[in-house]
Amino acid sequence: MKFSVYLFLGLGLIFLLAPFFCLGDDTGTSAEVTSPVTPPTPPPAGEGGATGTPVFPLVKFMIINNNADYTISTEVKLSFLTQDVSEMIISNSPNFSNAFWEKYFPERKWFLETGDGEKKVYAKFKSISDFESEVVFDSIILDTTPPTNVSGFEAFPGDSQVILKWKNPFDSDFKATRIMRSDKFYPTSPYEGTLIYEGGDLVFIDANVTNNMRYYYTAFSYDIAGNFSSGAIVSAVPRKSLPPEIPPEIPPEIPPEMPPEIPPEIPLPPEIKELTLEDFKFFQDGKEIPPVGGKVRVEKELPLEILIDYEKLPEVLKTIMITIDKEDKSFSFLLRVDEEKNAYRATIMPPEQSETYPLTFSIIDYKNQNLKNIGGQLKVTGIELPPLPQFIFLRLEIKELSLILTLKTSEETISFKIKIYFLLLLILLLIILWLWRRRQRKKRKPAHLYNKWVGKKDPESRNGSK
Image 1: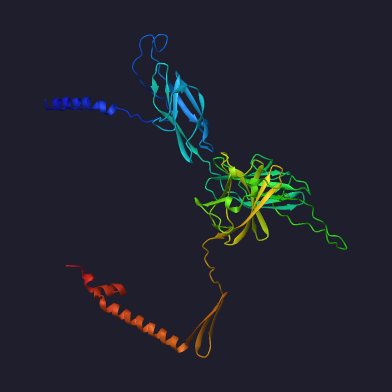
Image 2: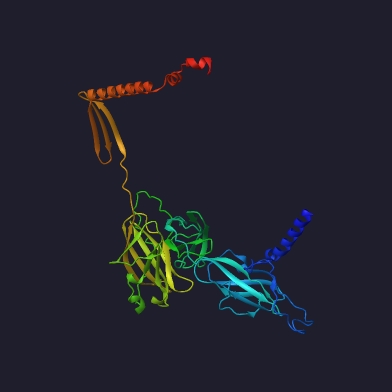
């Protein structure tokens, strides 16, 4: 009887609580799960199809850019696979603010919200019977930031070959470097000219060249999302080495390579004539660094972004080149216009040494003619620890009852001198101190512990404890 009462109460409790456990949530579903529908008020007879039977929308999947992981543009393509759908509503917000219903198409162009990071697109679908699906969504990572340019891009001409060397950037999302070549001018995009190398190495030998002909190279680094840097540039003329003759003759002097080669100046358009170093903007770690007195003070080991507003330059402009002179070498980079045509940009690594370097901006038109050079200085600073002194000489000698220790470093000489009898007295005192401490330690120990310490057996332990 008691068991039947408990069974009856348990079944009743389950019956009362079952509806609460069966309730679902109304959050968005993943993009590739078939979506259920939210039933509206049943339509009148004769509507919702030829026989008046309700039609429910079926959503199989929704993807962005063919299910890609990254995109470098806010403009993307949405693709849908549905059944019995007549309308759809799309939004970048899960609450569909400012969105509206539109005619259904299996593909649609869409614009993501600006700003790098993960972006989600939400959608709902409606059938001809006005039944709505639940919210579905897909996500993609927007990355519009190009990587830092390669550094130390150099060309070493030889006989029917040019050896190219560079250092890849340390960007965490760096993928590879692409090198384009031209015999006309520096390629200004990663698709201009002839592709001669693509990969993650640091050296490449271009053997498909002709002697006594100048070649222009641009190295573009790119990341896993597909963003390309503005480009590092260099040029070279391969030549056959001259064999020595008897009697030896002095070969004609070959002018040194001055990368990059700047065409002669021509009359300036008014927009370019007024440009100064202050029209360029410099950023490090998200902070703007304004030029002061013709100098730009930057920190080493931090990427340096350089840009100038697109509207400040005329349409005849092809590109802008920045050159940093370092000792007897020059390293040059292109400032390339961004996709939105807001600015010409380049991201470079400052030189490693804390010094002041000459800086030159060269403005080039579509005829590869140099319109203007704008000079300045790049002051590289950073925390540098002084080099540690290296001991290069150590001598120990006894002279006139004295012990002499001499340490000679690259900067100074240090000598220590102590009388021998003082040293012997010090050693004797240390021995006496050690014996005294040993005797005190012996007195403090109980007899049985001391015997155990020295290896003797305790007499009481032989008979056992009583």
